[in-house]
Image (cartoon, rainbow, N blue to C red):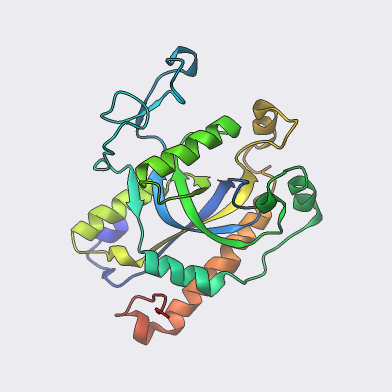
Amino acid sequence: MALGLDPRFDLSHAYWLIAGIAGGNPANVSLGSAVWAHWVVDGDLAHEIDAREIPPDWPTGYVPLGKSVPYEQPVNTNLGQIYELNASLVAWAFRLTKDLPLEDNAVIQERRSHFSEVAAKQPPFVFAGDDLSASTFWHGAKMNAWANAWVSYYTGGQGHFAVTGMEDTGTLQSLTFLAHAGKVDWNRILVLRTVSNYDQPPPGVSAWQSLAAEQAGRYSAFLPALESAYAVGHVVVDTLVHDWPHTLNDVPHVQDK
């Protein structure tokens, strides 16, 4: 907000690349993979009842703001619960980077070998998915099931949960305010998250044991994820800058066939 409101800068044609590491959904991605997000959903804005006190027929103790039961319709999205990015720009960024080779090594090869999901076993790759943003570092298969349902609920079934990170909805809220003030072009925003760890343990390992091993700086693929963020992100930035005579006024998009 401070940058966007500073009168010394004209950011009306600026592109924004929000990049960071994330927990990955093993159903969709593997360690070190990079994900371009179309939908970013907030995982903190909710009512919550402790799981030990929820009604037996409730799938979760998380209840959307303004609702009385989980996943109650109609969906309310006017409090910053969800952000949809420019789908055409996201598709352009994905197509530009989808075949990039990403760093792999013996350590993350061994770690991903314990998972049964096809995607989780693959070498790092670039993927187009969706992002659940929350300040709580959650972990486990049951929380993963909630994340899938939460993203689906807020996107009307259009979104597919791939990564969980922090800060993104806060950053996008600021950019929303700046866009409303005419200082930022909302259609020029990208979110890139790279997988430093899985959001749940492999079979045979408890959630608490897995979480205890995934402390900051000791994530399964911390350094490979950082390298992937640069390897993928810089291609998009370089392309935008190199083609500035065109990208200044025309936002890149995927050409219709």
